Image (cartoon, helix red, strand yellow):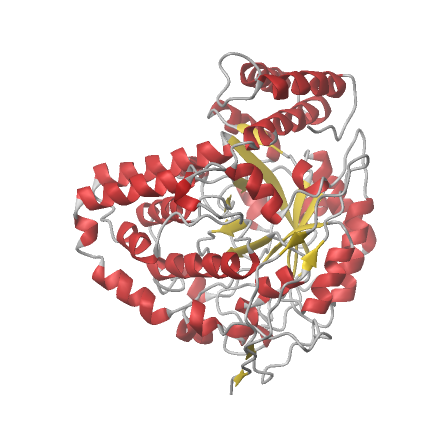
Amino acid sequence: MKSIIHQTGTRFAPIVNRSCRASGNSPLPVVRRANTIARYVPSGKIQHTWSVERETHHTYVDPAEWINEAAIFKALETTKEHAKDPARVRDILAKAKEKAFVTEHDPVNVGSKSEFVQGLSLEDCATLLNVDENNVELMNDIFDTALAIKNRIYGNRVVLFAPLYIANHCMNTCTYCAFRAGNTGMERTVLTDDDLREEVAALQRQGHRRILALTGEHPKYSFENFLHAVDVIGSVHTEPFGSIRRINVEIPPLSVSDMRRLKETDKVGTFVLFQETYHRDTFKKMHPAGPKSDFDYRVLTQDRAMRAGLDDVGIGALFGLFDYRYEVCAMLMHSEHLERHYNAGPHTISVPRMRPADGSELSISPPYPVDDAAFKKLVAVIRIAVPYTGMILSTRETPEMRSSLLKCGMSQMSAGSRTDVGAYHKDHTANTEANLSKLAGQFSLMDHRPTNEIVDWLMAEGYVPSWCTACYRQGRTGEDFMNICKAGDIHDFCHPNSLLTLQEYLQDYADPDLRRKGEEVIAREMGEQASEPISPQALKRLERKMKLVKDGQHDVYL
């Protein structure tokens, strides 16, 4: 039974003081978050022992109010005819582009200071999702709009990272996952500290600076263990200058009190959690037992992170569990909710598509399979609907599909990935299909290329590979970072910093041929044929910083 508490005079307005992580920088101004009317307490029927709430006074907005299933279904039904009208569709795209290209004094979004700028209403989003994928002209218009919005905000940069699985014990029963409790055929593993150091070292030797740390939900690997692992990861340094500069996490839902403890490590960037599906009946069917079966508790995870000061949060849905159009609309509603109550929408949105998982028949034949044409469309619509979010592209997709999806608005991607616990340092064999097929990960991967090949491929496609973590390390997170985006200043920060991290990678980890190619890219981007504008002042600063990097300095940013 839901417990509803009406407190008309009670509002949540925490003050977040972000101290700069980079030495020599002054603290950033105090940021006051938007007010939230407190009136809902999640049911205590399902126990959450992995992370116990010690701040029991928190109340929330009922998720049923902001994930409005009836409104989504109505929008998807009533816009079917709208989607057949090319003029209407193009008008939606033109208005969305105008909103996404907001400037500090833009009347379209006057008064907005948040990370999230709404590119589409629910009805407009549903209209685009209902466009027939066989209508080549309209689909190309959608793709072109998505790419234009991505390039305007994030340029031709593609941020690289790698997942790091620490433990695969799990007490949940997700029907589509190899880690689920009922999969007795899977060997369960927890990395020791030495194993973890070797894993991190192996990733550093690939050139990675950013990782996504993951674990299952089980008492055999506790939140205390994970906090210790974060410290271990941050302590690893390899030759020549290997270090992990941003640890994003994808772990079980945490209480507000434990979110604060994670924040206090001062090592964690984004807290990522997928709802998997926003459709309640499907969620119940796909998660029949275990703490993950609590829909409301899970969907409120990002709220708890925000209240604890972790203001970079990631959301996502697993496509294949339910109608992809519904899931996209629901993620738009989730984004709107976060913006409305915390003045910061999702820092990232992930769009994994279901792939076969060991011992799961459902994962082989998804209930709602999403073909390539529909998948490209949904990616483009998300970019248009939530323009300022980072969109993450998984190695679940083939190299060919990843190339296509980059043209639909993706801005981040995993590289050299494994989904096995301990796979990076234990798999010393060549990356052959035979060897990789023996690894028993959480799900099957489709892009097995090592990081250096991904870097080479991205540059050949016209992108700038990036490992930049400057904004996070200098305290520019949440609203602070996105305000730079909306003011149009991101190109004077992110693009130069991406080039600096690329130069670092080329000097430390690239072979001579790859280094030559990369330095040609850097020269182009700092010259008259640059893909995006850098102000004369920023260019001068970049030239000075680039000389420092070429002289052997590291961790150099604008």
